[in-house]
Length: 94
Image 1 (tube, helix red, strand yellow):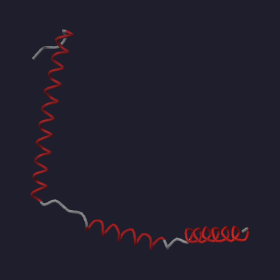
Image 2 (cartoon, helix red, strand yellow):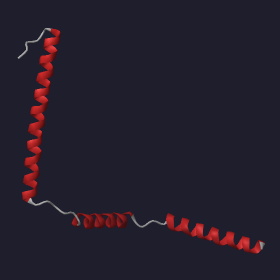
Image 3 (spheres, helix red, strand yellow):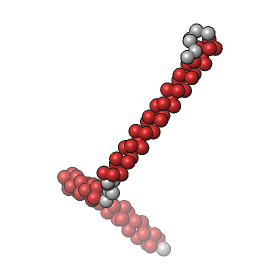
Image 4 (tube, helix red, strand yellow):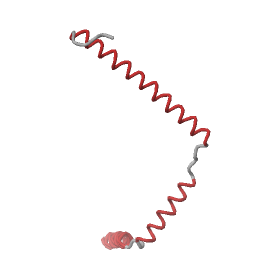
């Protein structure tokens, strides 16, 4: 029974040692870099790029939202400034 336990411990320690040895032995830095760059190239090929029509449509939507939000903030700022002027009695209410 003790022999089996010792044998199990031995094989377990061999497995750990082999894992450490495999972990310590890394491929060359240039090979790792080449592997990384080739995987990046593969991922870039998977990207679905928008058509020019979609890009133009999205650009128009962004510009429209910017104009609407700009007008909203301008109106809110002007209104609050007018209210503050009425409360404090210093500004002219326009």
